[in-house]
Image (cartoon, rainbow, N blue to C red; front, side):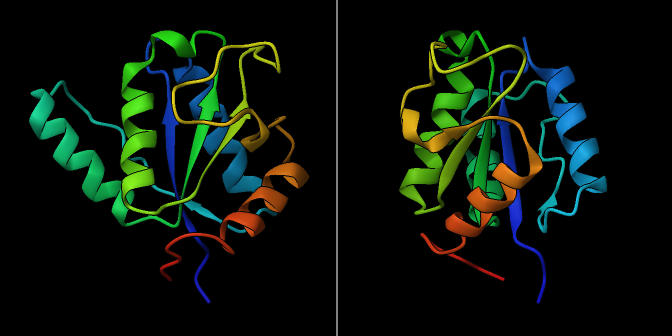
Length: 137
């Protein structure tokens, strides 16, 4: 059976380094999921960006939001969470960049769906996500 596919949502302005570390560590972890780099390589008009991201999210089993300290200003992350919800793709968050339970969360992400960055926690969350929503393999 193929590994579940994850879309990584993150604050491009503040957490690009953490995204690169997360993806790199995921490759070497024993956590069974695949990440594609879905990031837009260039600025796109808003409508084109939305259509592209929605298509990409629709091709995954879950969205993992890297929750940094400045999520209140990350409007793209909130839009990606909304798209995932519309597509019935489960979402969970991972605290990065010094964020913790007192940090702001993006709109649409419940506090009880955000975990600390440890691979056993992430593996457990992925297992839970695969029991929810639209699970394509």
